[in-house]
Image (cartoon, rainbow, N blue to C red; front, side, top):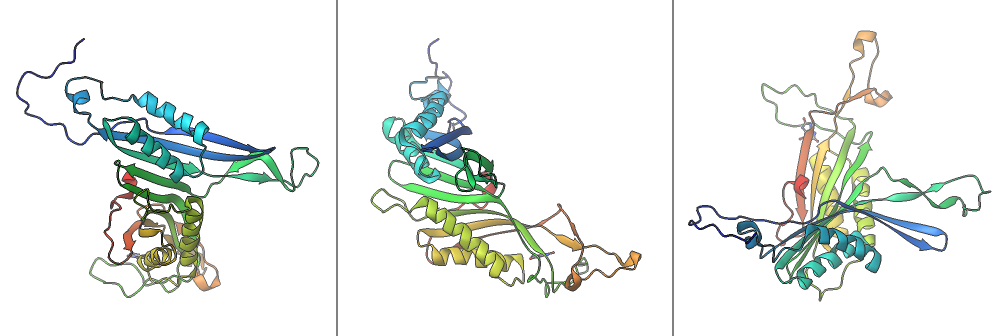
Length: 319
Ligand SMILES: O=c1[nH]c(=O)c2[nH]c(=O)[nH]c2[nH]1
């Protein structure tokens, strides 16, 4: 069949478009003798460029098949290895934009799942090192690491982050002094639980190939450390205040990062009324709480280095 353009004048226009293979689950094992290392990624490719005709006339002359983008992900994992999710995404984005003329922009999104070695007390097995099995892993339940690489042939935008990091302070949290109107029933609290599931994205100021690249693995570990330390060390008067402390700790300590955004659900823990059973239920004595799953307060904000432009989108679920 020949490719056809519509004969009638166009009344509609093609808007923003992108395509690629989403959620390529790639697992790479590196063998260092009989000690193995795992990189476990979920890689999504989105390409855009001169793709009008693909949509308008059905000509696929400018279309690199999504199947090819999938194959490239797996081949690159073998050919180049996976040093870090960011490095891997940069390789892929550069490849798509520089190897295919019609492709002008590549966006690579990666989720990374981490694994840790299974520790064992059995020293007899020939597979066992000091106290860890060299090829046996348990998936870390903690957080999922994220990155998004965007490249247009000139400029890079690298936004990394994490989600599903659940944290709790069992004290050192208060909430009082707020507006009270006729609908307010919330009691002021001078000793409450503060818990949240951190979703965060941070933007690197590495934007072109002439700059020295950050050490992506170390940067991630340090951001997480500062975030967690700020959460633990802040005597909190609101989750908003804790958020700002977490963000400013990262910006102050990590010069490679200019902007960080958080989406923090307030995972409410309500003291149960045990008065009907003749029981006092006070925080000071070690209380019993109902962990409510919904509704939840949702506290979201960006913390930026002074003078930089905010570029991380407001809705982190779309990132
Ligand atoms: O840390 C909090 N921030 C709020 O804005 C808020 N609102 C509320 O009901 N509880 C809380 N807690």
